[in-house]
Image (tube, rainbow, N blue to C red):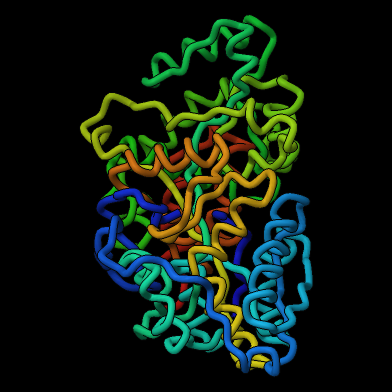
Length: 450
């Protein structure tokens, strides 16, 4: 079995109390599968998290977490603490280095995994469900569906229609910046690509890198491809490309890489040798870069003392017919259960609790978190400024994709596939794009049927 690639993403929608429209949730290896609109539901008002008198006797379950950075690590512990208090179970958290966990998750799930695993919705989930490496949790969903939207349910289903995932939070991919830097320099937020380039030229003249960039882990460049493809060719073409219905050798895809190549002078050089965390430090802490295009989880790298100074805006419009779609990436994260948990009853008690609005709020209101709860019934009154801004951007997004490595099949998006191809492009952007894209299509065609 091929190793699943590195994260990231780390979108879809499902935002507390806000209407979010028109989403397609892809099915592993299949054609386009329209997902129901995600927005306000007629579900009953949120109730408190499940609390069973029998739960205390369920004992201990284990949770394998991919959150090794300080802020998200604390957020995982916050939802664990909440659910332990509500259910009486004990949850032992095993923390793993984020990207190592992503790269080795196939072998991890085939070995002796934890009962509960923190992971991603969409194809990143369906891939393992199809392999029988995670267990269906339809009984859990029977209890938590009242808190969810149809789109969240679709993102949590396997290709067999069974439920395998409990969504907890999501976050948009945006252009981040320091408010104080913009105020000091007199910069204004660019709304079009021409305004973006003009701002980039000003930043260069001021001795700044216009756009921080780090792609050592392979996945961050996917977000740039996604937004350029959706802005240039539209959401439907992008999803068709992810699912194999459109071809990588299509001239439309070549136009994306030509545009990207022309924008690279505004990007921080040497991205393949830099982690996304280091890029975040340059932009969000040291103020040596003016902007940074990544998910709002990058705000966590700024430190709690700088969070209020971080602002962001959607990637600029390109002046195409698809600008009105206002499409963005916004991946969903949550939890799944391994195929043979040692204590399935305790694992399900935790998953049932994690699906409640209150538990989701416990996660996202942990200090330094920029993500938002997925349940429309979640209490947003304690959201920080970053989360309020995230909510507004998601509210105004017309079409929302998950992320390249969630919308495409996992064995295509991994280190031997798109991660490697994108690093090749960044290393040598002047290469023959026709051959480059033909090689991508050849690789896709060589993969076994799913």
